[in-house]
Image (cartoon, rainbow, N blue to C red):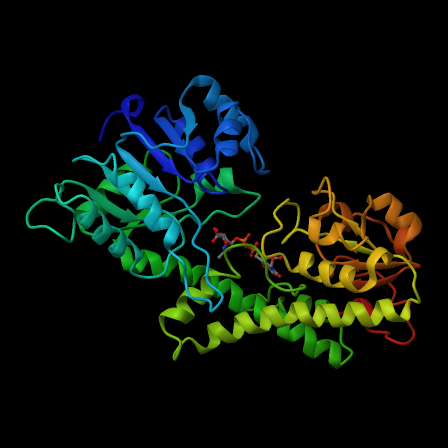
Length: 432
Ligand code: SAJ
């Protein structure tokens, strides 16, 4: 592989993973080209700015763009390493859609040459990297593609999933261990050499299929564990028990670690990836499918509970706290909080106020209902009813003196000292 300063890397897809990855690699001195179909994204990056909110990303991108090691384009150029980080959504029937991966492969194929390495980072159903190799072999019959040729292949192909947590992406890109699955062992070694340039965590090699499954399993594991907490919260509420207290007590056991209930599971990973396993083996993936259903069902349950509270509040203004899919980020994709707010706003219109410090304006789905975006101080002054949907730090720090008299449905358990304040539903604040 070329020395650092001469290494050319093309990152296809400048989203939540592609852009930070491109910037981190560019910081090592490699010449990085970020490729994206969106001209506005390309222009933003080339001006040294970012189109996504992520801690420390703006300074990093402006630095590498100023140094000239990162630039963006809508067109790919010849490079030594191609890193594909495009979305892999699912269809209405939950089957995976790898269309963007195949499109990115077609793009790479136009400039691929002997000696290059192609790495897929997008979360993908098992077998996708092999499909990518097969596709490349068809597109470029002049190249010896691993798994499709006799003798030593001309290029290397590997799968290496990202596992970074939104809000900690820049740190985790460097510190997390990586699992690298080549189409052949030689491919793994080639990709390993590349990741060692910027990853401080351990880099472990395996097969492409095992690496693909590992990524899916990580997120399915978390989904199943959150489903346990969500199911528990519904059971506990029915029994009039404070689920948060039970979880705190149970977690004192040295081998118990129950996660937190909430209004459902959001984001573009945990709410999506388990379906790839279910689709791969519908007959046997029973627990994984049920967990998905439990977590999605928790959002419907939350809507019903919030509606019951609002109906009793007799037309008083209601503040929905938070729209993001989790705390302290501006990402609303697959957000259960957004879904709850949309339902409530569609039903109660301008009675609903939204507090979301990470939004400059309401998404159209909410704005058109008459719901208003207000700040937290206005909510404290004007709304007697609070529905807590996201555990943003700014909400957690509201003292009891400012919220003690309010009717609260706290889906995240951020205010353990909140009195119920509701004689008809004394367990209300306990609901997870
Ligand atoms: N959530 C709960 N209760 C909990 C923990 C989370 O309700 O106790 C909810 C969150 O509010 C959110 C959703 O689950 O709606 C997902 O949040 P998260 O923080 O668990 O995970 P993500 O989606 O931000 O990132 C996950 C991570 N995967 C794992 O922790 C196994 C991350 O490492 C992956 O890189 C990322 O998915 C991804 O890109 O796949």
